[in-house]
Length: 103
Image 1 (cartoon, rainbow, N blue to C red):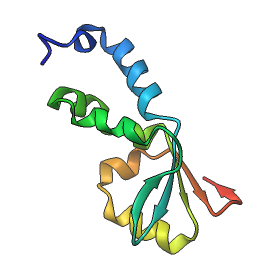
Image 2: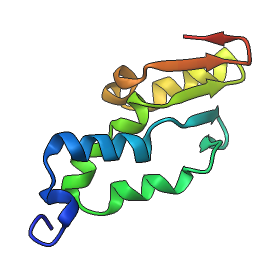
Image 3: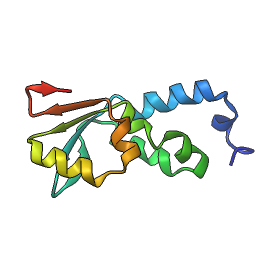
């Protein structure tokens, strides 16, 4: 609740910086059978999205905007991109295909 949370009393600009620090900067490994898995120590940061509706509304797109998505082959990448929502797909800024290519 906004009334009880010191975090939600902060100005939106400061909250956004905190959320981007907590949720961004990750590398996600895309796999068709296993879904998407995080490959670094921040994997539990996504629990932040479940704290309350307001935080979810403010942060749900950040992991897609501020992270790198890595796929071992184009088929896995395409399958995953078709499975996520258009808003999330449009928010993605960095995709790595294998170890050689970054888009």
